[in-house]
Image (cartoon, rainbow, N blue to C red; front, side):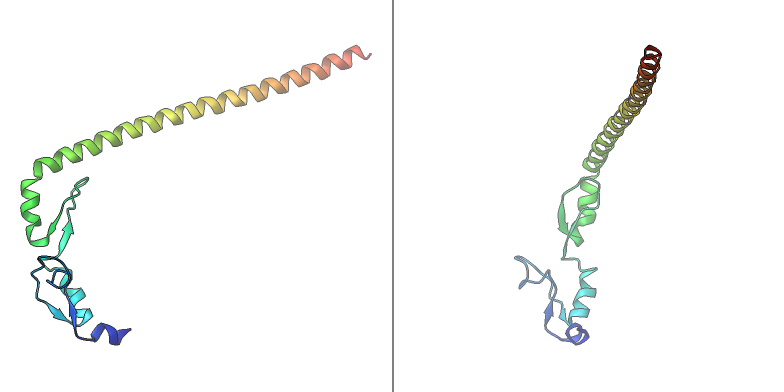
Length: 127
């Protein structure tokens, strides 16, 4: 496996042979190319902004971030609003669950009381 990492002839994923319109000319061992790809300006990367699905070259990401700043804020606000609504819904479910649990315990206690009452009344008739 280590020999494979040092064998020459590997191309960057952003090379013309790898992707249509690729411009990167870096070649080398697999190890060298993998290291290069961590910072290659031609590699397409995903935007880190919450909810943004944009992909662009690493060299173009700064421009995307600057141009899409307002959109990113709107996306973050939408995500926050959805998260807040979800938290409220979960809280409501938890509250209902507590109510159901309490009512179930009350029913079990009342059934126990009824069973005790029946056994008391049936034993008093048998005397």
